[in-house]
Image (cartoon, rainbow, N blue to C red; front, side):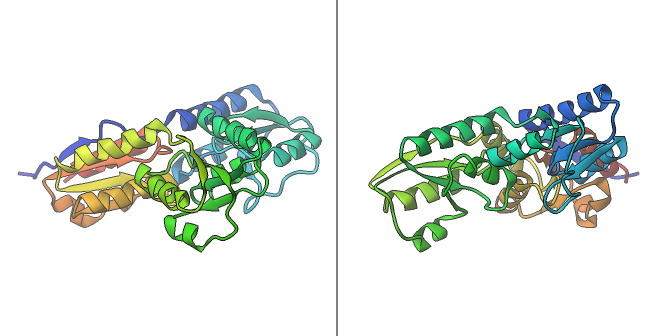
Length: 286
């Protein structure tokens, strides 16, 4: 008789609000735009399965590391991904006659506006997050000269401290990481204003993962290898459970996982639900 693996899903997982909006914007643009291709400025989301589907439907990724930005879009559609873009790049797209569909996450837009406000008010602007992440690039564009810290160690290496500054963070950052950077900065900046810019969905996923870890023998985190929030989920899973794996599709399921009795599933904010379904179905085939 075949052994049955008990599979338990985290209560909160998969697409977040911002990613869902971006994907829906792309789907609507494909339906409404007779002129192909439809462009996205940078990869719409950090998930290879979702990106492959969009590519087959007629979406072309442009920007650094992808297809070059056309000199003249001729009225074709460009979708701004959930991470947003700096204002100078938005203006350049307009100059090139792009029809812009803004799918920037509302929480990222809020951070952009707050960064600009405090910059205009004379504050030094500090950002906490992954320096190469699109969200950090977009927000920093609204506060020229802003400094990005990836961890508390980088804070200690910095020099030339201002009297007053504001700190914002990447919406997908772990609270503990943000707290450590804020604490380190407080030792150097007499007037430091720390803003709450972590998306609640990020904290909810981390909490759901912690609750899941108490019920299982191993955890599979599903999502793109380039997805920052998925990587953070995986690192948390490794700290919480002796058996943890980060996979992109059902084809990546490690053999060791199949020997466990209870497996927990969670997924990053850019992971399509049917990819999670496929992983669960593959695990049930013994």
